[in-house]
Image (tube, rainbow, N blue to C red; front, top):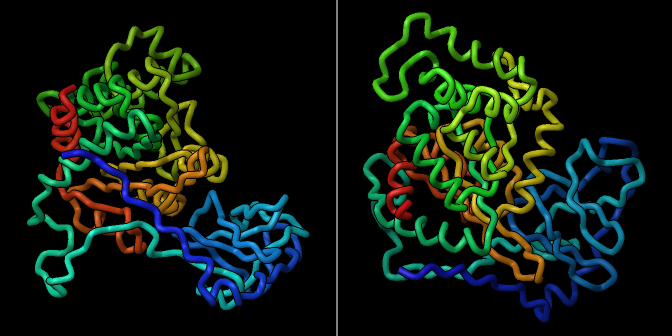
Length: 362
């Protein structure tokens, strides 16, 4: 199959509703971190705002944020980043009534008009995912040359030696542009390279090691003794694994902390908002996001990811979002956001990443 991006359909601004629409109303933010009453909250879809008689697209959007008019452009800001006096757009209608238009049906998609009723439309254990894999192979080949692929990994991705090897091949092959995870993924992956275990269990045989419950904190402690993950990798002559491959191939990784973290590793963001900003720096560039075996990190990333991306040449394209988990709830959660791009695959993540590497002939 030949991969082809879906075409973006621009609004027809010659329609009466656009021509006759008033300019969007602007009200100054009353204080830092506070919006004026009746503020407009953004969605995952492209949104246009009429100002000075012209319709302006918010080029870098995210859900549940504010639209601020600045330097002739629409800037999307989190509430925590609002400053007193910011020009905040207000209005809660979305079809031009208040100079605001949310463009939900924006990507051309072929749909069957002959089957208004159909079985098995949800993503479940019974869903056949062969075609999803075929699409994903072609998408990733396209993205390697033209896109920015962000992966969101949970610790289960590091529990199996073959899965670690398969993901390392994806990194080496140029299919990973950024990795987002928590302290646990990095810890157990480095534990696997250092001691051959993940949470004290052998990553090849799954047999528990004697006193293996020490292994992950021994690993954290050793990394902290060296002061950084790259220094640990160099000094201990680490030569395999997900994090090793990212360091070797200069793929950036963002590790965010949580209340339950052990250690944590020195690179882990302990301040939530600093970590969120680091994640969003990559999400701003993402054209495909793949979340595996981590509901919280995947949802957090999904909440920062719009359904579209404006490329440097002005082209508007779709952002693809995949969630991979053994839980039907987990893979369907992002779809509940109403995202036209979110797609779930219900499977073991170790099998998924190994299948992906084989399908890409790595």
